[in-house]
Length: 415
Image 1: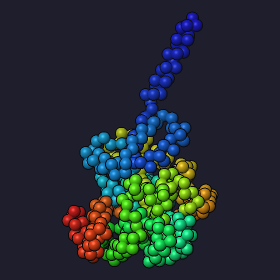
Image 2: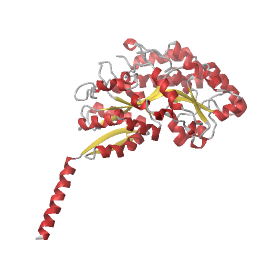
Image 3: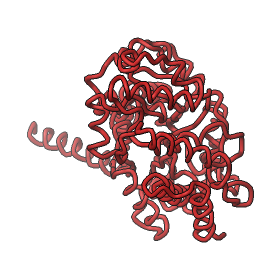
Image 4: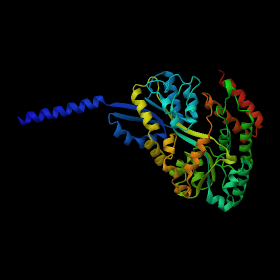
């Protein structure tokens, strides 16, 4: 009798487990490196809230990920349930007809718009007025600098930030006194300058009706600054994200870097972990405001589990604790205003000598305009970078280089 009861109990338990397993869902999240660490850090909390929804995280390098997703969207197969998108690609992906419009039911993401930093929703809104993705984190433009090296050279923060010209002059004093380079690569100056001080609705590379802007005074000045840095020997001439580039930070041979606030995470975790207390953060030269980076999450129209995908995206973007944990663990600066209002923003950061850098980033984020993104931004970026290389390496005339860039962009993107 007891054996029959035990057998029946075991069978019942197995049936329950089998039913639970059958009822569980596996959600595929396609991501790129670094952002994948943020997803992993959030999984323990997700699993507590949704034990029936398993996350399968697929991660590639940034460029490989976006190329893979572009191919998948074009083919209409091998698509994930959730697709991460980096800011540099949001223009091209938002124009895709293969992504769900998150403003529409059942998502109705418009209800959350006022909960996010003002410029984020416009970045993911396409020409049809559809919202292609939800913002997760942002990158307020920041000047990172080595205070110990500046002190040795008699350079003050104000010398770095007063103007773009004073920034270069400070670099000359720095190089003479310490031998350190002001920049890892002259192109960093161009990259930040072309993003700075745009007005609401303006684009980096394209204006109204697709007008190409790369021969404008903004680009001329950006190229002039980069060329001046190269001529003065202020940049190390390395290629971004290479081992040689990283060594410049590790060995204290590069004294400043202009990027989004997210770069702080790279300094802390792998570029210069032994330089704790030596680095500082400041606003960009001349009080420039720039958005440099950020991440988004989208749902492909052919995703298999759209309801669960939306639940995951809401969890990653509108959950204050998830956003704060991303900041705590990976230095991903929140796009969610509720997270930005948290006392955590006022904490001094030991790596930056006790500075309250997050307050600076929050203030910058509040002022950054909502710039226009374009599906051909990556194409224009590649062409402009190639012409900058011609200017720096072959001494090509700047205005000729930009004129050639404009002509090639116009040929490539005829609409």
